[in-house]
Image (cartoon, chains in turn blue, orange):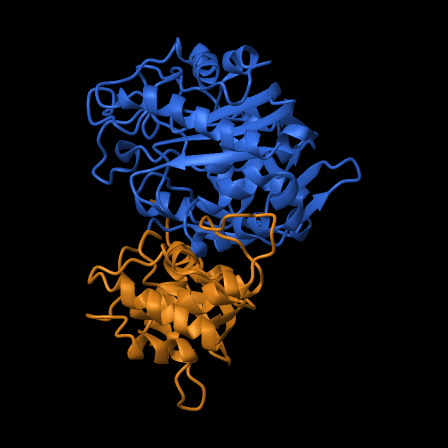
Amino acid sequence: MHPFALSRTDTPAHAVAEHARDPQLAFIAGGTDLLGLIKDRAAAPERLLDINGLSSLSRIDLGPDGRLRIGALARMSEVAAHRDVREQFPVIAEALLFSASGQLRNMASIGGNIMQRTRCPYFRDEDGLPCNKRRPGSGCSALHGLNRSHAIFGWSDDCIATNPSDLSVALAALDAHVIVLGPTGERSIPFTDFHRLPGDTPDRDTALERGELIVGIDVPASVEARASHYLKLRDRASYEFALVSAAAAVAVDRGRIRSVRLALGGVAHKPWRLTSAEAALRGAKLDDIGKLKSGIAASFKDARPLAHNGFKVELAQRVAVRALQIAGGRA
Amino acid sequence: MSAVTPLMSVTVTVNGRGRTLTVEPRTTLLEALREHFGLTGTKKACDRGECGACTVHVDGRRVLSCMALAAMQDGKQITTIEGLARDGVLHPMQAAFIEHDGFQCGFCTPGQIMSAVAAVEEAKAGWPSAATDDLAKSFTLADLSRAEIRERMSGNLCRCACYPNIVAAVAEAAGRS
């Protein structure tokens, strides 16, 4: 592994100051993504700052208004097992339980989960094939290479990678916010603005700036969150990234959709909210499959499949319908 | 490439015994266990967090030692496969693996057993899994079906494909523990 120095920090303000002044410094919490990147030579930080000593960031709290605050250092397994999360935000618990393995869920932090880099095999390739995310300006090997697992929405000629975080899909659907501490204080980033589309700067995955530390995630309470579901389709039955996944959260009045939130995973560089479909589905009966299908199709007019992933266009719509039905069954 | 980085001193408890070691920051827990402490029961296979062969317990939780830095374990309690038996008596999970022939070549077995011991503890603690039907319901050991065991053990690969026997071993050990 590339050599690096390692130090520890005890206060968020110190962590932020260190990160702000040192462009070669990276935070490390669970390390399950970062160490893999370093081993694959896709990251080469000179200094790591161990933030696990920031114990105030490990909490999982349900506020008096029902709002959920997940500390950035809470582990995936702790959040998934949390009683309030399972009851009030099942889509979050499911997204976590369908991620990674038992061992990795014990290690990986929530902040690190949403910071995961793409699983595009060209990005992680140890032989250093062209990749604009890894070496800006070198080109995209996937665009005309093997792209079965890649994006159908929002991609650019510079990058067609997809975001691998299941949790992020659930958080995008629930209108969560990422709470970030920077040199001038805290700011709150709407989850759907946290990850970026690639454009011509695919090396930047998120809206975070140098000197910013994720301290937690806020998820507002909602009727929809209680009737929510995460459905993940993958090539293996377990311990695999999504080919396509959907997070659905729905409020229902006498069998008709009062409001719905839908987000897809495995289809874009960021969790992909289906805003057109959400509008089109209002008032639809949950057992009217034709109406559900046509409503969801409203968000697929701008789908742009690649040479090997055309199947995702149909698959993603079916996954969204099924996720919506299962969520509706919980309403 | 940066210059040589400063070595770090770490104090940990390994299988009940306090130990101090000096490591490079990039040394993984797996490498420290094998190369510094001579505990070669923990195996290095993929070295990328994909196969589970390096599974150990840190503060009672199963983790992948290949994806953890030794220098970040200061003050932790670490248990490896060498620390499971008590006074020469095998842990019930070890005995169950032998009884059910839960291995062939044996390379993945330490990781399988360490993972299984912790997986049963997680089930006892009421943790659900992706195979759990109703997340709102409290999970109990009685709910630990074969499907639950397969899902909870999916982070441990066995290229000899001893999976049916591994599942049988875990089921029996869960019942008797």
